[in-house]
Length: 249
Image (cartoon, rainbow, N blue to C red; front, side, top):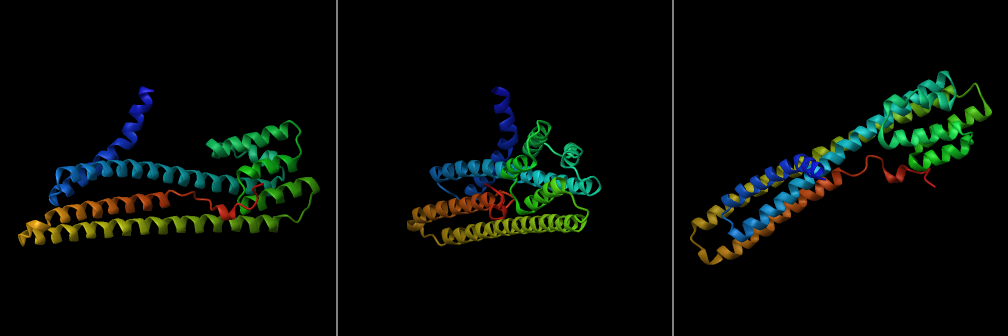
C-alpha cells in the first residue's frame, strides 16, 4: 500500500505541485486575499493532478491504438499467405499486451478447445467491435469455413480501411491537441490581461471596489481552471469512437 502511494505521488504529485506553484505566483501577482489565494492553490493542485492523470490516459490509449493497428495489419498479412485464424493470431501475439492480449488468448484457447469459429469470433468482437475489425474477422471466418481463392482483393480493401482508420484517428487526435494548446495559450493571454487590468484599477485608488475585484478575480481564475480541466477531459476520451462499434452484441 505504501509503495502504491509513493508511486502515485511520484507520478501525479509533481504536476500537481507545479500547477499549485504557478497559480500561487499568479495569485500573488494579482494580490488576491489569503482566503481566495488558498482556494486558487487548492484548485490548481486538483487541476495539476487531473492533467497528469488525463495525460497518462491519453498516452495509454495512444499506445493501445498503435498496438491494435499493428496487430491487425500483421494478422491480415499472415492470413493472406496462410488462411488460418489460429496461425495468424498466435504468430502475432508478440505484438500485443494487456486487454487485447487477453482477448486474443481467450480466442486461441477456445479454438484449441474445439469451439466453433463463429461463436469464438462473436465473443472476440464483443470486446473489439469496431466495424473494420468486424469486417476483417468475418471475412477470415468465412474463408476458413468455406474456402475460396478470391479473398485477396477483399483483404486488400480491408487493409486500406485499417490504414485510413489509423490516419483519420491520428489526424483527429492531433487536431484535438492543437485545439487544447490554443485554449491554454488564450487562457494565458486572458490572465495577463487580468493582471494589467487589475494593476490599472489599483493605480486609480478605487479602494472601495477592491473586495468586488478580488472576488471577480477568484471567479475568473476558477473558470480558467475549470476550462482547462474540461479540455483535458475531452482530450482523454477513447480513441475508438463508440458510433463505429457496430459489432457489439
